[in-house]
Each structure stands twice: as C-alpha cells, then as structure tokens.
Length: 386
Image (cartoon, rainbow, N blue to C red; front, top):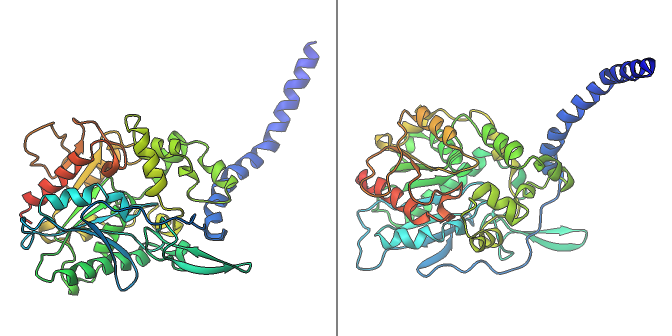
C-alpha cells in the first residue's frame, strides 16, 4: 500500500513540470487573443430602430463632419450670454443621449449645454456607413447618431481628438461671443479630454475655460480599472469575450453585467434596463482604450492648456471601476486635495467624492444621485466665475 502511494506521488510530481509551460502559455495567450480579436471581427450591425426620443428642450444637430451634437438652451427669461457653455463628453460605449438628464437640467439653471457623440458611436440605423456584406447592404452607425468610419476599430486617442476639436469648433460658431466651454468628461472621455488638451496646438489659444473629470481614467492609465473589471467584478470577462469572438460589448452584454460595472445595487432596475436599451453603443474602438492602457498624458501639460489651471475632479463613492483610490491618484497627479462633500452647504473644494447622498456608481450622470452630481459641477463652474 505504501508503495502504491509513493508511486502516485512520484507520477504526479513528474507530470506537473510538463503541464506548467502549457498552463503558462495558455494563461498568456488567452488575453492576447482576446485583445487581438476586436481588430479582426467584422463590424457589429445595430438593430434597426429610430433614435431615442430626446427630452423636451433638447435638439439634435450635426457638425460638418457629421458628428451628432445635442443642445439644450436656457429658457428665454434666463440670459446665458455671459456664461460659459458646458460641453459633455461621454466615455467608452457611450453616446450623447446618456446626458439626457443633465442637458435640460443644466439648461434650466441658465447654461447652454452641449453633448457630443464621438465617431463610431450610434444607437440606431438612421446614420452611418453602408457596407456591402456578401451582397447585403448593412448600415453600421457610430456613437449616438455619429457616422462610423471604416477604420473605426483602429481609431485611437489622436483620431478621436479631432472629433473633440470639431465639437469645440461647432460650439464656437454657434455663439462667437460666448466664452470657451467648460468641458465635462466622463470615464474614458476624461482620458480623451486630457490627451486632446495636452496635445493641442498652443498657438490656437485655449480650447476650454475649465476641465471637470467625472469618474475619469487617470493620467497613469486604465490598467487598474481593467484589473478591477476583469478580475474582481467579472472574472469570466476574458473567456466570455473569446466566446463572443472578441466583441468588446461582451462585458456589458446583459443588464446585470451593466449594473455590476456601471451602477449600484440601489439603482432601480428600470433605469438600468433603459440605459442598457438606449444609451450603450453597440460596439467600441479598441485602439483608444489601448492608447490609455498605461501612462498616456502628463498633468502639467493638461493644466498648461487650461486657463487658470481650472481642473476639477468628481468621483462616485461606490464606483466599482474608477475606485476612490484611483480618483485620489488623479487628484495627486493634478496637485489637488481630496475632500468628502457633506449633504448640504457650500462645496468650496477643488476635488470631491460624492458620498453623503445616495452614493452613485460609475455612471454618476445616470445613477440615483444624478441631480446632486450635476449641482456639484454647476457650483464649481460658478465658483470659477464662468
């Protein structure tokens, strides 16, 4: 009997070294294949349906480049002539319609508010590129109602920076007497905003009056965010992405996955379902996320392009992706402190984390405390005197 046990132990010990290289190879290959597949798969067609209905007072227009811009203007009895407009920029898988709550609300406070859909982001088939696939004409639209360029999956930060510039140019032409807009950028859109400003031409003058980063990707990169997402929140993320042939939408393929990543357990199911149905783009460009994987911008270069170094950061206390420690690191990079906001009273801070009222998740602008978050942003803009 002892001999049999000894043989079994010896057999197992001799097999382990042979399996170890295979296990390591598979462990390394799976993420590499998962990241390569989005470049190889064909575009994802969006189911035919009309664009989402816009709130009262919000209108849709397009830049000469075809980018969708939603606009909300203040009531006629409120003058916004001397006030800086606000430009809202979505993040990955986002569209301009995710700001549908903020647009009329901020306009009711006397601000002209814009929200742009980046290239390749769409929620309907009304616009986009027509592509012949095996004799069938299929429309591939982009973020919101913006067109989807043929090279969409290869569009990186530099390419999408031109979209942001186009939106800023359109806002300038919309009201040449207004100050430069305050840019409010969410998540990966915050990363894009930082990159675009840091790499803008100084001879063109300031592009924005201020920059507010809302649950933003930090200057150090999004690798920590992805580790949180792919390991802690959704350990089946990479295997599922492989099963879905590299579809980047795979981690957000059900309302439950969306709630786990973007919201909290307190978010009403109806709100999550509505967001899932109407506000998530059907595909995403992998390249701009690749460009933000590790350090991609120096905060000093960003602040140099913002008049008065007006940079402000907002984070959700229960954000499962851009967690409090990541937000604090962003604050440290920009040289600002971390403060917790009380339920009432003034907000004289350069940096804050929403905590005292029903704490939001990653999509602060769509979660239960969206109005309080909008008030925080508006208060900071007013504090800047813009």
